[in-house]
Image (cartoon, rainbow, N blue to C red; front, side, top):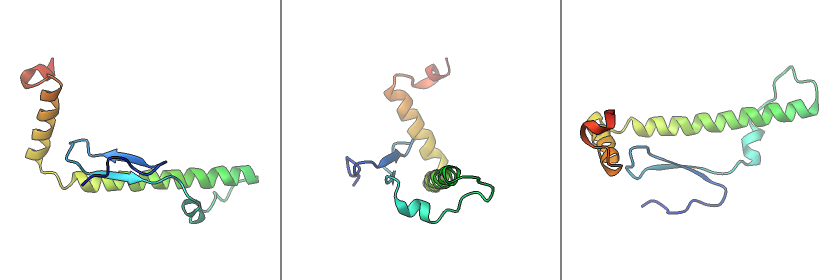
Length: 100
């Protein structure tokens, strides 16, 4: 069962095929930056901090993208088509109307 409200600060990514799956990305923490080293060519403390934070953010985005791709691989082609057709029907764009 999907928790209707994620914890504060959490970003919830829902399956675009509306199957009920979701990926919760918790707010940034100090653990995110402790495993990241700054670029070796930084010249100041501010550049080091910016480098670490940027790398940590990119790493979190890559993890979220990997989770979504892994989930989408569980959908079969017919299930994807059925879900898309249902979404279009819900928007009044069923049949050939969605191509117009």
